[in-house]
Length: 229
Image (cartoon, rainbow, N blue to C red; front, side, top):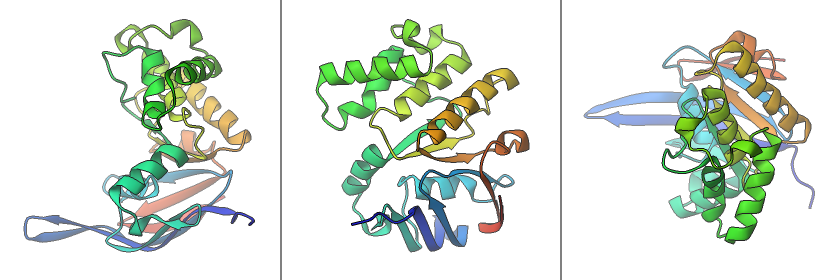
């Protein structure tokens, strides 16, 4: 059976959060598709719904109304355990604040996603070393986050996002805590991964960073405002 060209599809997605007695809409009926191998940047002002949209696409949350298809499967109808499994296999995450565990080495941080997929220790270690080499940090494998620069920590986080060879990389402000030069290095790694076939979805507030994407999706007031190639 041939796979659809769309790896992600949102259909009329609404997300409403309950704050006390008040309903707060975060997404107001978003429909969009992401093609396999595409590099998309999502932009919008604070409170526009960028983070909520990222959470939906990343299977971290489910919509109040609507459907989200990841590789043809509707995640809106999945249980939390099923969501966790599909997250672990299909999606890699890169965050602005790196989210590395401070007590673990770079190598150990990269192995964590593989532990949840029950991959044996020797294979986890071998894979983690290979990934750290890809991001140019194999010589820092046994250093803890406090012994690494911000750029090095982000590269460890990128290696971790690749641990289970996901099809989709979700990068939430990946250059937000980095200087311009280091930010470009991180974007170059994302570009390389995209050329190797990974689908990249990146939230950013920086128009210069967004220019590296093939398509920019603008969101405002919980709605897709426009999409530019």
